[in-house]
Amino acid sequence: MKSRIIAGLLALILGVFGIHRFYLRDIGGGIFYVFLFIITNSFWFPVTWILGIIEGIRLFNMSNQEFDSKYNKNFVDYREIPGRRAENYRNTRDQRVPQKRDTNFRIFPKKNPFRKSALEKYNNYDFKGAISDYTKALDISPDDPELHFQIARAYSLTENKELAFRHLDTAVQYGMKDTAKIGTDEDLAFLRIQPEYESFKSNNFRLTLKAIGPEKKDLLNEDLLLSQIKKLNELREKGVISQEEFTIERKKIMNLKN
Image (cartoon, rainbow, N blue to C red; front, side):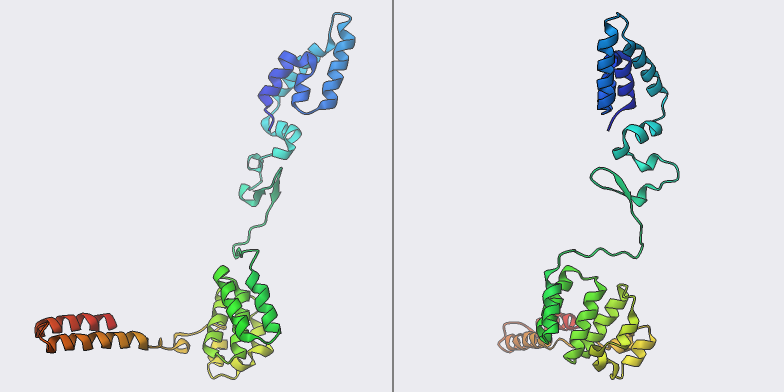
């Protein structure tokens, strides 16, 4: 990026040789100065000396914006231009280009290999394989509404209505615009005959707490807790721990359960 002050000083001091023109990347102007200097120097009065002083004064009197627009076209900072909003511009390699802002814009990774493989398996009726790949794709792009919609279709075809409804709900939550296709897509026909569908549709394709229902009990966790209580009881019967210690430890285990 060229400096107006440096260009002006070069014009005043070395303008007789056109150095300021070379500095400003005006190669043709610089060569003209050199050629004119050689011709007029033979008369012991180099005209380029006067021209350099005139151009130096002109550069010093020039505003920064005017200088930049003329000599720094590839480096103009639009934050300094009235009426321009700096946040609407992004840097490229050599200039700033207008960029529209979208408050609803989401950034998804450009490369998601599982998206393509999931679609191929889906089209080949390998719905379980498609679900597996769509799940991996969502690990990369968890807020991509299209991926949630596609995996919901696969769950519908495998008659897993709970996960299908949940992924449709998430797709709408993350900005799915064409919600009308939920009511027309052939692969979602299984969901549309479910009793929960009408309330799901009337709620703008969002799940209600009633539709979600209570969480399933973790049976494996309960078995572990019961096993611990059983071991405590055995230790009490063997006299390893007292009744009071048994009661305290059992209470701790029951608190973990709740």
